[in-house]
Image 1 (cartoon, rainbow, N blue to C red):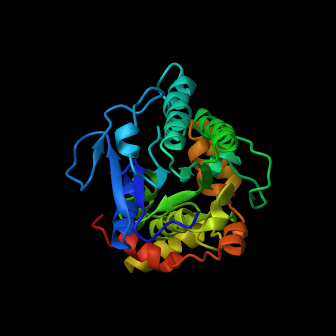
Image 2 (cartoon, rainbow, N blue to C red):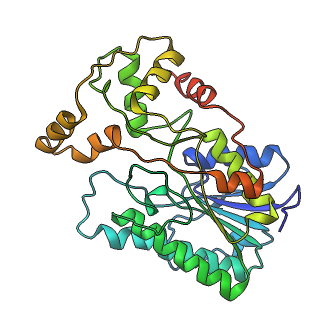
Image 3 (cartoon, helix red, strand yellow):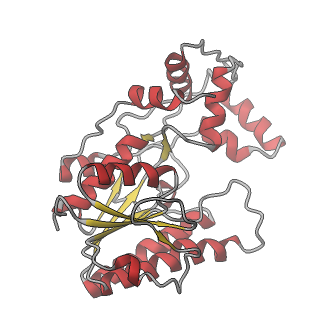
Length: 314
């Protein structure tokens, strides 16, 4: 499938961080976007689906659609308080995804772009992840996404639905929340950070680059039945990222050379091992497959992406 310039695309999670940017971009280049939202938000052509699960009726939303981009998900939680988190992740990330895909196939939708996660590959290692690596999900969120991928491949084989799977790393951009926003705030205040001795490699993905990759995967015939890892290009170390953020804000980067083993020891004592690992460990990808097969290149540099991200008031 090569999506026509005026195709009709259902986008779930349309009011989220990525969804809003994607809807704006697709609309700007001539696609008719059908945003699926949980609560009425006033978006053109929006369809309200108050609950996304295994029994959600998507028939009206899918009518006449050429493609689906499925962004809606139960997002990863650092501290999951539910007694059975896997069941909840599976309900939204696996069962709801497969229900939507089956109905999309029945509605003669041609392409289904599923936004998965790099966590399907694993939680990090001292070598780049590739599409050909054996999946190694380590938590409930990643497992639910991997199970959805497996189910989508089965549906594709049974129905001919063209499935494309994207596994992004950490996505940043204007409106980013959580840990990345807290890091920006810390750097903006000029607080010293004990990360100067860290020598890791982390892949990041700017929102504008992510949206462009999704757009290409909707349109390019070579994307069908493929899984792609994405990033901005070259991985960066945590100190490099902090220096780049500081430069974008015209602030000094205050980094103290504390040995990583000491940070990890302190993190274990304080029950913050996972948080420390995200700052000291490596998690990076080889995104050459989407570049070689689809001719994709990130349209924005990391410097441009960080500048746009920090332009928001802190």
